[in-house]
Image 1 (cartoon, rainbow, N blue to C red):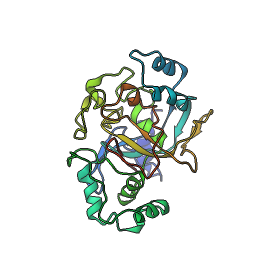
Image 2 (image 1 turned 45 degrees about the vertical axis):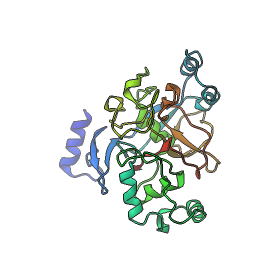
Image 3 (image 1 turned 90 degrees about the vertical axis):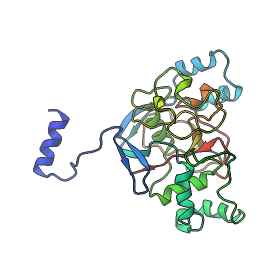
Length: 287
C-alpha cells in the first residue's frame, strides 16, 4: 500500500502521531522571520570513499597541502541515519538577522549562553562585540563571530547549531553529492574560487542543495556543533561527535578558497570555539 494512502487512512481515523510531515525542501518562516527548509529523516553515506579521495589527490592543478593533509579525516566513509527531520536555515545567518539578537539583549542575557560561552564572554571588553568585519553589509552573512556567539544566537532563536552529520546531509542528500548541486565543480554556482569577498546570501540560486538550502558551498565556512574527531568505522544513528575537544568543525568552504574546500565532506580543522574571522559564519536548525 502506498505511503500516501496509509497517511490518508491514518488521518481519517484520527490515529495519534500521524500528522502529515513537511515535504523535503518545504519552506517556512520561523518566529523571527527567517526562511527555513525542511530536511526529512533519512540515511546517507557521510565522508569520502577511496575513489573520492584519490580524485582529490590526483587533481590538476594540485590541491593545497592542507587539503591533502585533511583527507584522512574524511574517512572512513560510513552510513549515517538521521532519525528525525529538522528545519535548517535556507541561507547563512545575515548581519541583519544577527543584529536582532544583539538588540534583544543577546550579549547580556545569561540564558542564551553555555557555561563556557559565558565565561568567554566575561573576558571580552564591554561594547566590543560583535566584532566589526570590514565591508560586511546587512544582507551578507554575519562573519567574525565565534562558535560561542553562534551558539548563543541559536538558543535565542529556539534552535541550535547543526551537527556535522545534519549539515552534511542537508548539503549532499541521500545521493551523497560531492557538492550541493552534484558531483562536478562549477564555479558559477558559488562564491568560492576567485571570490573577492562576501556576497549577499542567496546570490547563487543555481548552487542550491537537494532541499533548496543556499550557499552551502562558499561565501563563509559554517560552524557546526561537533568537536573535531575521527569518523566511526561502522554505521551510526544521529551522531554528535566527541564529547570534548579543542577544535570545532567548520563546513562548506569560504570565498576565495579552492574547489576542494567546497566539497560537502570537507572538515576544516584548526579553529577553537573562541576564534572568529571574516571567513566564518553559520546557520542554525530548529525542530
